[in-house]
Length: 573
Ligand SMILES: Cc1cc2nc3c(=O)[nH]c(=O)nc-3n(C[C@H](O)[C@H](O)[C@H](O)COP(=O)(O)OP(=O)(O)OC[C@H]3O[C@@H](n4cnc5c(N)ncnc54)[C@H](O)[C@@H]3O)c2cc1C
Figure 1 (cartoon, protein in one colour):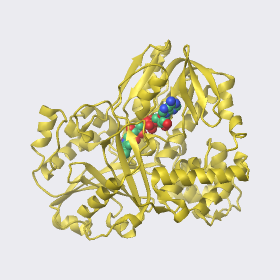
Figure 2 (figure 1 turned 90 degrees about the horizontal axis):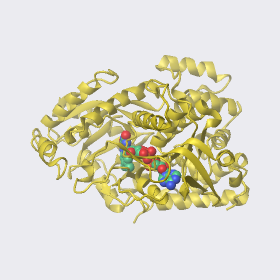
Figure 3 (figure 1 turned 90 degrees about the vertical axis):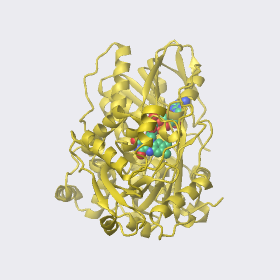
């Protein structure tokens, strides 16, 4: 692959030409990114490096929920639930472009089950052992507690219970064996990758040339008390010195520590997969709600309408982070089975799958605790064996990223002998700044910014980028026409993303700068069109374009079981 353009990557050059900072953060998932933003806002000289693309680890494999984690109540994780609900309510205000209230319905098949087993697990077995089915009484108890935690924010309505008749009137396709439904609100995060990029952009803007980031740049080892960084696109290495090093490499935290010369056993990640279905009947059956319930094995699973598709997940299986993960046939069978439990009359098979993804949760090491009951809370561990203070992050959900980052940034500031001065608690994120609060305000925003353009297009950009849509409008000509092969996108818009968001490979664009891969239908033709749209911005020649298409075909096949050479279909076993 032609590396001439890669070797000139401006962000890497910036780091290489001044290879020092107060803080080096290793790993740009949401937690590394949020900590980067926090430190940049405090005026700290900070560098963030990511061995792959930004947000390509656990943070790109989530169930897309910003949630209080109602089920953590039965593990007794009250601190985490309270923090999660508080952060959820904050995100509804600070990132309204990407985080929205999500009506969630739990179908309930029994009245009392689980009422004894859950407190028993909480008080006696501390989460070990198999859960029993959660009945209505237990769910009612949990939701009442959840409402109490939510009270401060007042951002989402309280829960409600319905008996069978009313429940089936609301959701007629649901299994008629249900006894009740419980409906409550959490929040959905429909574009996690874009939300994370917005957080990072805010950090870059706040810190200027003292807040540097680079993807495809890994922490590969130590040289004295400097960290050796390797440009993964060229193989070139250079040493970088920082006063404090933060290891936020998620499920790979122990592996990164080992590369830096320290053996740790902090992590015990579990794998979770999802499938995405193009299934209008199932989509309609959800009535726009997330259906959140307990499958026969006691695992909490979800059927979730998103971007005109249905997201189904997830599993929880002990996993080795050194090995790649992919959604297996057993998992697909499990998902199809769980849909049948809730919507028995709706036929679902593998031909409906348009995308699948898997990731490893960065959970703490656990012994005999069942994967679903391992703590989702986080902790920060300091070590000084490298000749430079290092803080390793162990755990951390998407939902709590801001609070976690504040905590990690405060600990870092203490090591630097400084005090934080800026709070992120109510700071609007990226395109959430000035985001119109209701339908009328949206219409006004569109009218003000249309400037002769089709208002539907301006509205689509507002939906996609929040108020940062103005940057896309400025960068693209008024006559910009949608690409027939990539509906909703124009060549100039894709080129703008490539030029301004450190796109290195075609898959960065299709999987993480846009939702093109998620909604499915990625054919080789579409890959070619996308590659040629961004080629001029990235200085790609025809050979590089072809190589990028080939790389993406292979990645889709290997990691997402999608065959772009066969119309973007799901690959059977
Ligand atoms: C299946 C599943 C469903 C989930 N659902 C939800 C949900 O609905 N809601 C929720 O709140 N949370 C959810 N989570 C949890 C959440 O996604 C993660 O806990 C969170 O994203 C972790 O972010 P992170 O930044 O700590 O780790 P990551 O996102 O994994 O980031 C770590 C980064 O470090 C990089 N890295 C590793 N080694 C190096 C190195 N040597 N040098 C440089 N970079 C390196 C990796 O490439 C990676 O990008 C889910 C997780 C999974 C897997």
